[in-house]
Every structure is written in structure tokens, then in C-alpha cells.
Length: 377
Image 1 (cartoon, rainbow, N blue to C red):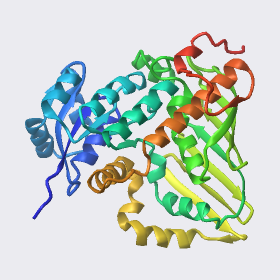
Image 2 (image 1 turned 90 degrees about the horizontal axis):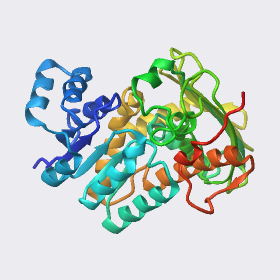
Image 3 (image 1 turned 45 degrees about the vertical axis):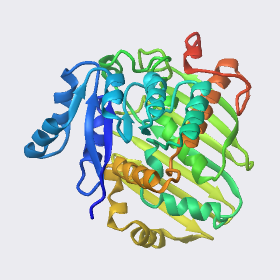
């Protein structure tokens, strides 16, 4: 007997929403897209038209899916099993809170929220309501990463020295001009909150640790926006290792890159993605282990694992569905969302106060409190 699919509602029809629709409507996903909401009806058609689906399937989706211009009305009428939230970052908290209180599980795009107190509240509601939150931390779902994290935690790479993260995710000025909320402190933040939060989450997860202190400097060099387009920082982890961070949207928009390096006493890891092409180089005691990890990936995840880069959101939905049905935590859960936001906010606060900041933060801090930050010339 076929299982009843979980009903999914999508709130927000921005550019990332197409990946959600592709993942939800994927064959044998065990999910059913029941409703979509945005502030007006105009984004609906544009969203469906950008999905790489047959005209027949697009027509069927439009026919079957209910559309709303009020997310509260959607939550009340549809009572979805899962609510996917893809609105501007500054709206994540209020919509996530409403969905959780309505009894829905969440797929929440990064960041979890824009303040520490809001992330903690969402985590508390999640636990009180026995709901699951899967964060859109896509790097955790990339090929090889899961097996690497298991081995690093088990000590195969030995005591960790440090890691480094490079995110060169260029955008031209039109990217920020196209949406008034982009690059603002209240609704988006800069390269740290928007582009680097994925990478910071991945590195802390790979190193089986959490940040306990932050140091950072910010720059605004090429863009007309409120927040930073350049950030350099360091996180100290609770196992004593350090993590160096470089993030910028000043690089060419045709050459997106996210690169990671991790050094242990027994081995080292290089992995990343550049121009949509993944790469990795894994060495233990000086010997290359790429083939071993490639074979393990196929054995543990099948051929699906090798194609995760085409739409990692499909992997997140599959993981969330499994978490909901079997009452367990997703790979990128609510706690990971809270920790990654606090790490970013600590880096911001370090730049603002020009000193090292301890984590967890002594008091609530939000990205909006950076509004009076003065960039160097």
C-alpha cells in the first residue's frame, strides 16, 4: 500500500523557490505541493515558468495547487505537514513562528533569523511542539561530505589544527538594485549572513565543533548597499582549532566559488565548488583517498548521491521527510540554524566593537544593530 504523501506549502516565490518546486514534485518524492503564497498573484506564474518541467506538468501543478496572498490564511486553511519558507531573511522568524504554532514542520532557508533571541525562540517552539526544522544548509548534503564528517568525528584525520573557508560569490550592482531588501541590515545582511552562513555551518559541522569566539573586519568596496560586500574573520572552536573565513561578492559573477580546507595531524581535506563544478582532494598519511570516498558515496547513497549538486534541495526534502516519519533530527536541524546565525552575528559584533567576541553572546544582538556601522574608506 502506497504511503500518503506529506503535504507541503511554499511561502515565497523568489528565485530559490523554483528549486523547492522541482524537489517537491520530483517523482517518488513522497511529497505533495498543496499551496503557494506570495504578496501578490504576479510572482506565481513567473515562478512556475522558471521551473524546468514539461508544460503538461506545469499545467497540472497550477491546476492542483492553491494560491494565496496571505500566508496566515494559507496556514489556517491548508494545515500543511511541511511549510517551506523562502521569503527575505528578515521575514523568516515571524513566518516560521506562525507555521510552527500551526503544527507544521519546516524547511527554512538560511539564515534561521536575523537575531540571536529569535533563533533561540524558534528552537524552543520546535522542541515544545515536537516539530522538525530542516535548514537550507545545502553544503551538508553535497557528495562525500557526510562520510567525511563521520570519519573526522571518529578521529581518522587525527587532532585538528585548523580549517579555512573561501566564499567568492560575486554579484553585480543590479543584483542588489533588483530587490530593495537585498544588502540591507534588517532583511538580508551582507556576504557573511547571506553567502557565507552555509560555509560556516559546514566547517563547524565537519570539524565536529562549535564556535566559542569570533574576530572579524568588514569592508564595502564595490557595491552601493547598506551591509558588507567583503569580510575577513576567524572563529575559535571549542576543540581548540581555528577557522579562517574569507567572503566577498566583489568577485566576477560568472565565477562563483566556495572552497574549504581542513588540516588534521593525520590528514587533510580540500573540497569545494567552482562554476558549478565540484572537486575534492582527500589525503590521509600522505595517501590520496579520493577513490575510496567516491566508492563509499555510491554504496551509502547510490547514484543519487553523485547527482546531489544538481538540486541539493531534493536531498534536504528527502531527509526532512525521513525525520518527520521516523521522529528524528534532520541532518541540518534547528540547532545548526541557531549556531550558524550566532557565529555570523558574533563576527558582525566583533567588527562593530573592534574586539574579540565570546560565543554564546552575552546578550541579544541582531544584524539590524549594524545599521550605524561605519566602513573604512
